[in-house]
Amino acid sequence: MKKTITVVLSALAIVLAGCGKAPEAKKLSVFCWSEYIPQSVIDQFTKETGIQVSVENYASNEEMLAKLTAGGGQYDIIQPSEYVVEALIAQNLLHPIDKNKIPNLSNIAPQFLKLSFDPENKFSVPFMAGTVGIVINTELIKDDIKGFADVFKPQNQGKIVVLDDAREITAWALLSLGIPINELSDANLEKVKPVLANWLPLVKVFDSDSPKTALLNGDVAVGVVWGGEGAILLQSNPKFRWVIPAEGTHLFIDSLAIPKTAKNVENAEAFMNFILRPDISQKISDAFPYTNPNLAARKLLTEDQLQNKASFPSDADIAKMQTFRDIGTQGSKIDEIVTSLKAR
Amino acid sequence: MPLLAWLLLFVIAPTAMLVLVSFAERDSLGRIVYDFTIQNYIRAFDWLWLKVLFSSVWYALLTTLICLIAGYPVAFFIGRAPQRWRTLLLMFVMVPFWTSFLIRTYAWITILSKEGFLNSILVSAGIFTQPVEILYTPFAIVLGLVYNFLPFMILPIYTSVEKLDSNLIEAAHDLGAGPLLAFSKVIIPLTRPGIAAGAMLVFVPSIAMFAITSLMGGGTNPTIGEVIFKQFTSGRNQPFGAALGSLLLLIFVLALWITRKYRQED
Image (cartoon, rainbow over all chains, first blue to last red; front, side):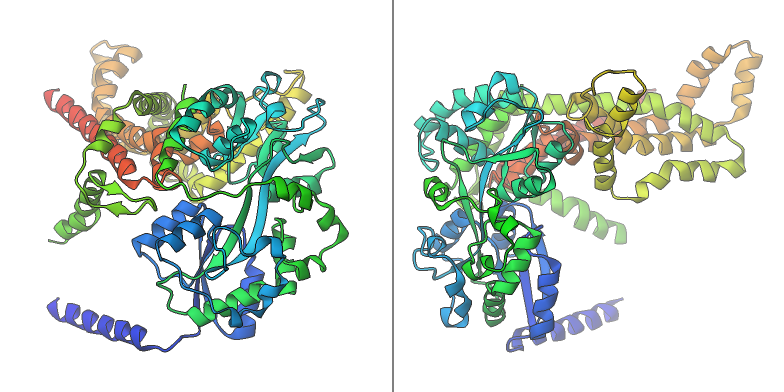
């Protein structure tokens, strides 16, 4: 028994030593959202560069943060949203990017570059953007819906699906009060409570993963959902209509970044440049119709794709939208408020 | 020795980890900071979380009861069936569970939704004029839980029934007991270990189950499993999640201890 252990340990030691010494292996470890980077894109990257890619998925920014900071895995590429990029930079957890290695960055529309969460784009490049808006099944709802106030009305009780995301829901309530979505002081939370107390009992389904399901199945008539989900609904049936809330809404920007702990930084930069290539970016848009920030890729999209308002809101609409800032521990207060109003 | 190592690795170490984290704090990024605090437990006893816990316990109890009522006759039937049939019948219980429970849950969503299979039958058969709301109701939650945990009730009871000595039942009949009396005075007490094991196996996981409850219930009734899950993700509050988890664990230990005590006194 002892002998076996010694053999195993020495074998392990050799393997570990080998790992440490390797210069930059032909490897890349990608930690990204589920349903965001098509497998065909990953395969093509391996085919063109010979770099073997291992992919791990997450379903929320916080899940990614938890795994990243616990040091469980060695990731070379992560895909954080804007407020998480901000937090990671503040905690000095990202590796600066060598922009000379990413010439395709010039394909990105200026409105998605040099934003407040990473003013110089020193640590992140935009992957996809998107928004949150209202989808209406016009066969079931005849009223004119312009914004959140029209969705959360007593006559829509039991006909609404919303994202199961406390921060999102709170942001909508803040918008309806005319308060910027990042001003989450305790005083503002008190103002939000009565609004949410009116809204949440009207909701039939809370679902962040696939809110389109309840709309497609006819279980609900109106939803506040991600733009990408809305775009798919609009494609599927003309009875669905997309409305950007009159009160304004949340614009999210998901980026690619390299964690400090990354082992294969050069491969990661090669991957970033690959993703920003117009033909690759087009493939991603075909599969997941979010707001593509890549102007060169947009030229390759069909007229139908570009006309889809859930994917591509007008510049005037985008100008009215707000992005999330990191709110740290205030998040669990919001979570508590939303949970308490759900549980009755 | 191997058993001890196994216990240490898979039972004691994770539990110790959980308890340790539950007394810690976290920073703004959600990283655990090992400063001793009991704040997480104080917060856990807020009425809000207790309410969520009670409703989860209620759903779990209901699920256990329905599983028992639905599962006992099936287990009894299989256990008393001719030997050569038993394996096949047990297969019928198990086969659906060879596919992922998420796929089966989505199948239920397709069946129960307003434009789904069941509603289209009910409406075209003229039983209802309008599609009825089944999905995203408490009924759907309990249905999902019962469907998913029923085999955990059937299998332990089956084991008890199989061991049941027919002579004892015959003796009861010979001594003048009717079927009802024989069942309640002889069969039930003899299969009690199976019932207790089945009840535990259904009750414990259904308290903490969150995927089925949020998918089929629409997430409008937060369960304790869902709340804990959210602390570890969007809430960025692992210590609080760990505290809720430790309390849940305590409840299970208590429940187990009480059933054991009750059995010993028997």
